[in-house]
Amino acid sequence: MGNELAIKIYEVDYSFIIKNYLDPQMWRKEWTLFVYKDMVFSIRLYSIYTQGRDIHFDVILKYSNEDSVEYKEETISYNLDNTTIPVLKRQILGAMERLIRRVEEDFTRNTKDYKKARKLERDHRDNLEEKASDYLDSNGIYIDDVRDAYISYYVNKHEFSYASNVINAYNHDLLFDVYMIFYKATGQNDKFESLKQIYLNKHRDIDNIMDEINEQIEYMGTEDYTIELEDNLEAIV
Image 1 (cartoon, rainbow, N blue to C red):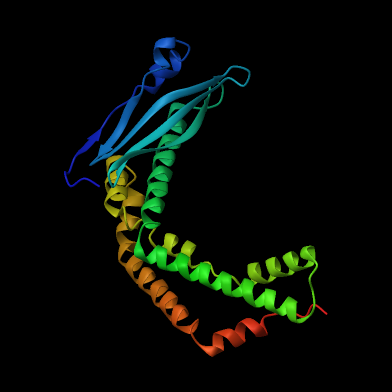
Image 2 (cartoon, one colour):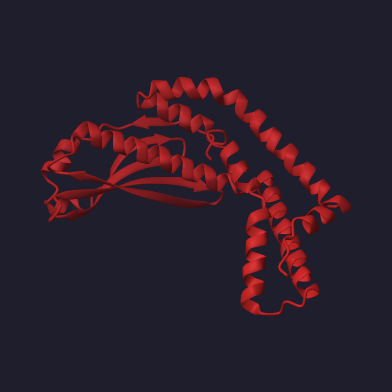
């Protein structure tokens, strides 16, 4: 992310867009909503569903990721009969927040913590598959469908989910400043105050998860771990 502090908020005349949505000149336009550092949010007309009287908008987030510029999009709809401008604005804010979350998840997947969690999951899954396969061999089970079903059941029942825990722990953490500026700039003061209160707990959550992951990595090198895998095998004969 860039180091320059740059915040810009733009007012968009949604009533004008909706009133003129059939004008082809509107179809190639893009309206900037919010800019913070190198993150730019915008909106554009995406499609028109005449039968349902729906107008579809793309909410777009452009951001920098290392040496590249990337985009994320989410589509929302406005019904000409039932949707109001305040509802549309809330939908847009919700889409913007979800886009921040998706970018944060991508950044989390590049952290050492996430990569360590994924390696632990893969190593454990490999061990589960090997243990189940050896067990089937020792019982003379060589029918592919039976082997596949047993191995799949055993692995799915005992595999780890540490990577998803890391992503959840980093929620509102890696892009804490983006969330806070976004909430404050868009008048979402309740979310601003709530996030400010819980922020310190986030670091404790991450530390606890990584302690558990490190303990599990150490445990996987012990004989007790191998015995546990064997004890979890269920009789097939």
